[in-house]
Amino acid sequence: MTVKYHIPVLLSEVITRFNPQPGNIYIDSTVGHGGHSQELLSKGAIVYGIDADKNNLTITTDRINNPNFHPILGNFKDIKKIWQKYINAPVDGILADLGLSNNQQSQEGRGFSFNDSQSLDMRLDPNTQETSAKDIINSYDETQLYLLFSKIAQEQFALPLAQKIITSRQQSTIKTGKQLADIIHEYYQSRHIRKAIDPATKIFMALRIETNNEFENLNIFLNDSQKIIKTNGIIAIISFHSSEDRIVKNFIKKNNFTTIRFLPTKDEIKTNHLSRSAVLRVYS
Image 1 (cartoon, rainbow, N blue to C red):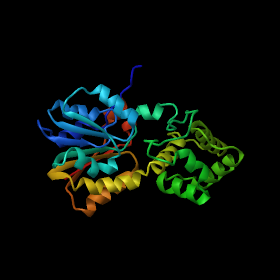
Image 2: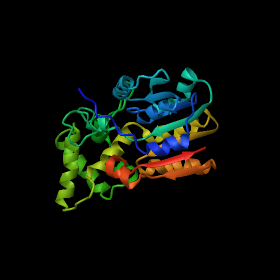
Image 3: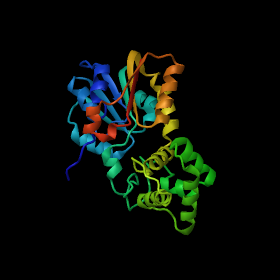
Image 4: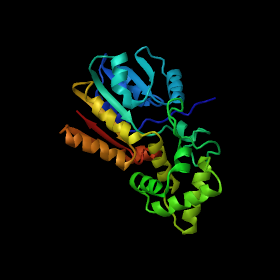
C-alpha cells in the first residue's frame, strides 16, 4: 500500500532558524512522518525522532534510511526522560509540531475523521491511555461538555451542542466519529447556520486535545525542554490551535526568551491547506 506522507508545515522557516550543521543534535519530539527530520538529516545533523503514535513511527522508520536517525516511541511530555536514556548531552535544537498527520486524520478506526464509521477513539497510544474520546463524549455531564466546547473549541454554541449530545447519547451510545459529526451537523442545519469550515472541526479538535491531555503535556514539555537544550540552542513550536499557541506565547514571555513568529505564506496554504492555521514560534 502506498503511503501518502504528511507534508511538513513551515519547513523552510524551521530549517533556516535551526541552521543545522554536521554533527548537530536535534530532537524532533513529534516526528510524524519525518518531513522536518529528513531535511535536518540532509544537512548532516543527528536526529532523535519521538512519536507517541506507533503507526506514525513505523511509517517514518521505513521512510528514513539514515544511521543518524534514531526513532523513539514515546510522548513528547517525556522528553527529559527520553533525553536521559538516549542522549544525555545538551542538544542544539528541539522541534514540536502539535498537529495531526493526514494519515492519522484519515485512518479508519482512529476516530479523528468525521466519516469514521468505526470506534471514536482518538488516543495516540491506546496501549498506555485508558480514556478514549468515546468515553469522554458519553460520560461527561452537561457542564463538562460545555466547558470543553467553550474553553478549548471556543464554540459559539457550546451549551446547546452539549445538550444535544446528551440527548442523543440517552437514546443510543455515541460510538463513532461519523455519529458525533452527524449530531453536530444536525444542530447547525436545524438553525440554518452555515460555516466556511466544517462545524465539527473545532469540536473534534477539542475532544482530541482532551483525550490526549495535550495542554497539560505541552506545559510539561516546554518546562523540561529548557533543562536539556544547549545554551543558545533553538526551540521551535508549531501550533494549530489558538489556546496551544497562547500557552507557548505565555511561556516565552514569562521566561523573557528571544523569539520570532512565523505564519505560512499564501503559496504554502495554497499547496497545503492544512497549514492555514499553523503558527511557528522559535525561541532561545
